[in-house]
Image (cartoon, rainbow, N blue to C red; front, side):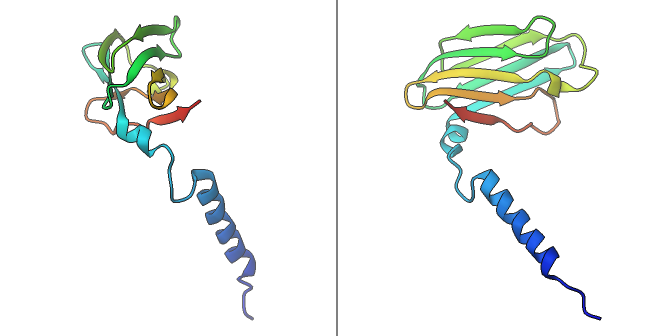
Length: 135
């Protein structure tokens, strides 16, 4: 007896369409942001995190850096298109670095208000995804 392939094929097509729709299809309006902004946060075993930011266009007017999930949230403001900040972190978090996301609120002459989010990672480990948002 022949199997009915209609429902599995329909489910597959629906899944692919849902993925394309949710990810924005073949075009990505965040590409200019990815090409312009660089953010990385590296944990060093010496007990600190180095956060580096670079705006290749040099059009950043202000940046607010936050590290969330800490007992007292770390926050610092900058007025440059590039900075490196060293923050003391004596111990690695028990539940991983995802509990301490790095968030930047950037005011930019061309893009307006940009939010950038990433996670801390250790040396010689893959760089986590960076999320960009325009508001």
